[in-house]
Image (cartoon, rainbow, N blue to C red; front, side, top):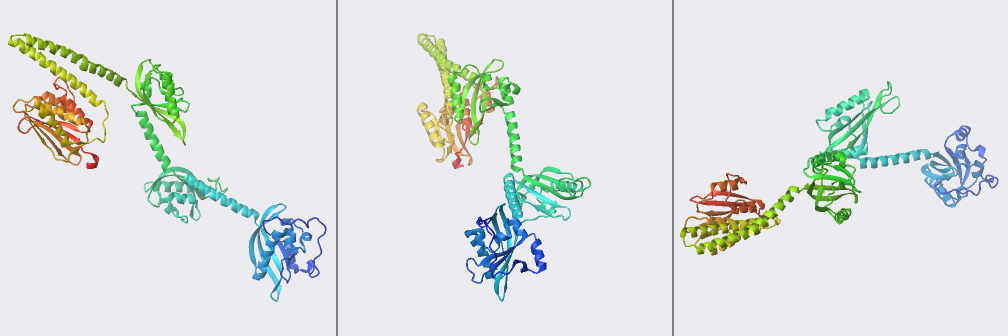
Length: 630
């Protein structure tokens, strides 16, 4: 018997031929007691004659029992005297004959499994062949076939279910377990073993299993298991666990009772709890995501910037409290509408077309927008809108806006003041100076000429102050290069050389090693010029002196100092610089020191003022060193 189609030519085509003359009669084959077994046994039994020549068709069916006929739908008259090839066809019959031949050659019982294509469908049999003969010659074969089709199908289904369960457990990071309450035997599935990182053949006891939980959680899992076993109370908890390798995990553990009454979960009536069944699930990543989501949500809710999220079509799905405060629309009013609720009408349609083209292409869009609050007020924001994708598809958009109304107004005011300082004040001072110069030349009286000279000097000072303020603003309008580095000795030498030409009587010294470098750009020289100018211009003794030094304070910091022996910086101005703010009591007379302080702060450093050891002042600039030199 094989899985191939059997031959059908001899079925229903007339009576089967009589057994060959050499074959004894069918009724005299077996003793009476065996005959009874032959007729009543549930397994298919067949007898096969073996010809002495052992050729291809050396095997002919002699008898089959009723069970054989029932299982195969082949009748005894139909098969009697036929060879396997004549009953099942050439290819299939040859396979069957080959199995018979192995039995004859072995001279002992052989067993194998075969699947046969029958009228009612494919059937699977476990077949046993036993040789029978006299004087060492095999003359007959007794065959017994047991139909195992349903059993094999159950085994295949069980294997499929095990494979499916294993794959599902692996994907879901879940595993099952069962505790036999009568024997205390605990059985884990492969998924449970994978979660705890143990070998595939690992079989724990209940105390072993409890050890995989965190020490602080072990008493709790013991109580839950005991209560489930004693009263049938199910449990579902999240506990801390550890793998065999020591990795900490978050585990969701389920357990329920199995009753002796019906085998289902729970205790049915007075039924005894015979087992506990449950599952364990690794929820570490989910718990971490939940924690991160809570932190993120809290951060978004407390953010100072307005945040709005829309779906793919632009409908608002979320706004944070800062957005509510900026726009005047609360969450209930905003959700379900579009960001057009704050549209001011100050931008052309092309502005919004470019916005949508950018974000629909998956890119981030940034611009300054004028919006309108619910109250009707206009306000300025720096707006950033970015797409949110899932598997490469845009699903939402998130907008983050920072209100810049005050900054915008401040920039306007600075622009106006800058124009006043650079143009109006300068032009006015030029006129004042010109008239004062004319008066000084025309007047004969000494006191009057002195007054005219004073007017000229103040006009020059005011003009210089206006230029310095304008210079300060232009210095800070450009971004700092974070990789910029300056050689301290070279910068000090350059600045000293500039003042040597302007103050030929001054004594200017530079003290610095060759290898001192600081994180700064060309604005460092501007700060040093202000300090040296302050030291030399306000000196009250001849000759004016200034000592410029640079030294590595540590691997992280460089100190650059400008020291003089002059009258010192006024206390009110020094206090204002050190405090970082000016008041009516503490304030400066110019912007030079402030300019130096702002420049150094922009490099991540600090400015301090100290008394010189003999007389005068030391202004110290502390700057960070380049990273590769730290």
